[in-house]
Length: 248
Image (tube, rainbow, N blue to C red):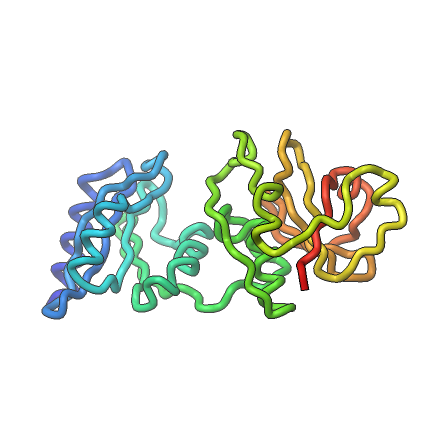
């Protein structure tokens, strides 16, 4: 049975890469599914995995990807929040792919299917690039207003460099600035539902966004915290650098 051969090859790969995470793909070439080991291109391979783009392209040319595999060195096979988030983010591109996690040296193999729906706006876990403050804006506009706004590639801690993710891209995403950050601008400003509040949080750059949802409240997703709904005032207004509104 192909399942036993797949499991054997996956486990051997995990052992050979320990203490780093191994990664690979389960491919269906029309004959029988098989495991293809891939290079881990993550910056911290002992903590994370990223399939090398050349290996990914090779696998896609061979057949259909029906499984995404990686190991958890010195940890359980239970999927982390990041695993669940990344599985969700890739589910559209690879709709038939389940995820397989092998723990070593524990020796347990776990399989799970990605969730198909985005999590609720309030109370979601934080995973940068998948469930973060910009994803919150995107998902709010999609769920509540039926509007698709573009995603932008971003690396974790991009705000420690020179990339102005928000200020450089809000116009191309369909927004217009309607208010600045000066106290005289904010005083008496009339928010509209859906306004996006751009903030500067412990950074030299504008690195956070919230969505105004009415009655003085906003929803947002701070780094490392659960997404939440709270009053837009005090510290948040003092941190505001611009308010942008979608062009209707």
